[in-house]
Length: 536
Image (cartoon, rainbow, N blue to C red; front, top):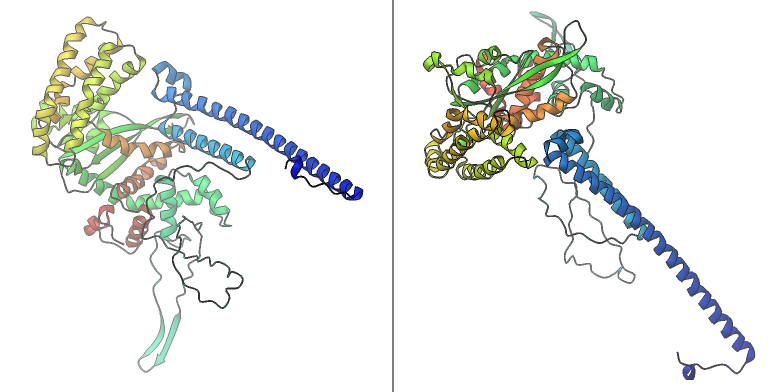
């Protein structure tokens, strides 16, 4: 307001009152400015703290990336974390970032820069929908007016009801009949149970088994979780139940391996397990042998099946015993134990070995990532089109796969072996590149076999993916030999993993299967019990 527009009163008291009011207004503005300056200072401190925390998290991410993808020396210095440990660390980083964002949002008074909404799939149709209708309050003056619905906003959020224990009370009344020609008592027979005279239902047994053998949740943790619901189940009791469940399921696990050996091509691999040496109390290494059949990549209609076998040894005698009678294609890594199954003196009695190109690539990739070998980098680049060609023929019948491989992959494979044969004499015999080349040249026939047989995959990654979930359980386990939990673990894990491979809920399948076994399901119809035949 300009001075000419300002009308000043002639009355002295009114003029004083105006001056006082203006002074109070100015003081209020100064106080508000001071508050804003203090708030801005606080925001600057919060932002500075957030930036520092984000910088620390960024440094952790870079360290993890070096550990995961860097040179061998960097990976060793970073601690050689497993894939599961990487996932856990990145989860914690996500949690940390969310906490920082929440702090910044609160400090900014609730204002927050909106992210672009993430595309979200609709929730599964079988999930229960609980409708909540929030009606607006009737505006003043509209109480007697007609209310017309012209639309609505609908949102869906995922909710969960924690698992609850319940007690199944089974009553079996006894009746006495008195009359002509009959005098006695009748009562329904007690329902069959896996644990005779025990407290668990088959659903509870399935819950414990799936949690331990499929989800990697040890019994001592389950004991603590159940105690929160005031259900006291000692883990030693649960361990005994699992032994009984494993025993009842052994015929099914054996049948799974039998069905695997009926396949035209079988994958095999092995991994280590911690176990106690008898009498010494010290840990030693045992092995989980894994056999997998999956005909889908070459157009087969058979169900995917995996079978685990726990052994105290990695000797070739183990795989020879497991695959006794098998005469098909065996696709494996470079472990020499498998070679005894395909010895030349066995003729048609031996299996046909197919090798894994991924194992070859890894040896060269380590050198390429470290920047220590030109030939390794050249090899990695020339190999890449092989997997691109495989993606184009996945799921097609063997004849089409062979034709495509002859057209696109055969020349690439020939060029790779020509490159290795040319470069090997130029390298030091003890060098890492020379070792990688000799590894490939020594398995040339088995590596080239996929070019002329459409049933063979380019790698054995399928079986490695089946082993990976077991490494989670391995971190939370210490066995006492095959008789000390190892055999039970292999048996139950065989069936639960097979269920998951067939898109079957392992808990639902195991509950139904245990109930059927308890009620005397005939061994002659074991095929109907297998996970791939499960029906609700």
